[in-house]
Image (cartoon, rainbow, N blue to C red; front, side, top):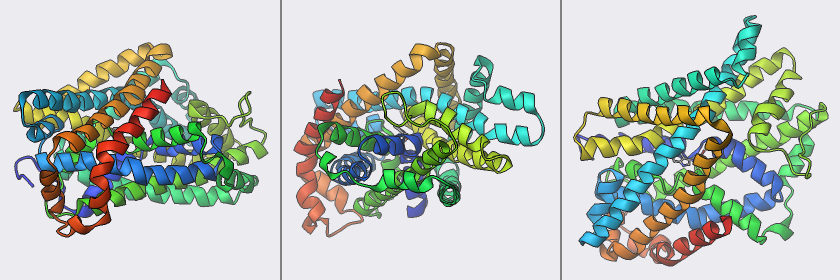
Length: 448
Ligand code: TRP
């Protein structure tokens, strides 16, 4: 671990930080609704298999590249490259990931800002500030700009402090809070009428759907998005892990936490939707599918909370704080990608680089807020449906085709001396070389 550039001080710190990046809005509202509309437990089953068989190997490729390079995404990729052509390729992939992270942050911070304003609203209402409370959930331009800026301010505040004092410390505080809140909310929703039906809808597998191409593709896309692949983030987090750590198990633990939290979120959201239905809220769209996306979070669930009377204020507060925390532990990782690049390549002090990049991304966010009707969707599609899969695929190509097998092995061996004889080493190189790029390519092609 380089003293000057910092690193995670403990295994637990890394796990919380990487799981914090992985667990985000995608887990808490993306996964449950995809599950509900894709055959319930059948989707969960497919997701589990794909997360471990395809997303995990790609995730390992990024972590390994980072730990080997001990540097930002671009420098790490270039360290592996052996000639000018490969170095250029490394630059494109590394820098592409950094831009992708910045683009994701620009729209993610807007949505996270909504989560923050929705979590303050019940407090304002409780204190009797009805007008202010209404404004907080008004979706007005000023509210959007103020809360996007507030959220970006928090992200900048943490990243300015660096890896150990910023990312690690805050992830270690926020992630246990997130898990605790999630479990409390699940327990509460289970005591309400209608939750049973939701529970059944979520967990009853429709096995006949397991091999449906659409289901497979949604599950794989979700798994890649959730592990933050293709955004330089896992490369940079990998570079902060000590050489004595066993990356193979660390990566598996993070994947397991990510998958488990997505699963738990389903236990909250789907039953909550059926509780809302029992109270007369419409939960199915016109085409018969469950309402998802922003309508679910900002219409269905608030309707449920307001039907609960005063308790609803506390539940709403808990739920939106949960969403805000999930977003914040993801957003700090997004900002770390570009910041580490500028700090290391352009010899800029971390505080200055963080503030400047954070503000530049905020300007883009405000532009998106002003043109919300088309730009949010555009940037989200560009970065998550095009950027992430393409760059994740190129990272696998890099690890599988350009990186020397013996060098890869000696990197994994650090902290895991017997890996050569493990199942991981028998399967993984072959996977990253052929299976992962092909699978990602297929998903990408299909999503077009
Ligand atoms: N994994 C995050 C989620 O589930 C979203 C995400 C996608 C992300 N790409 C990222 C987070 C890059 C951090 C960095 O919501």
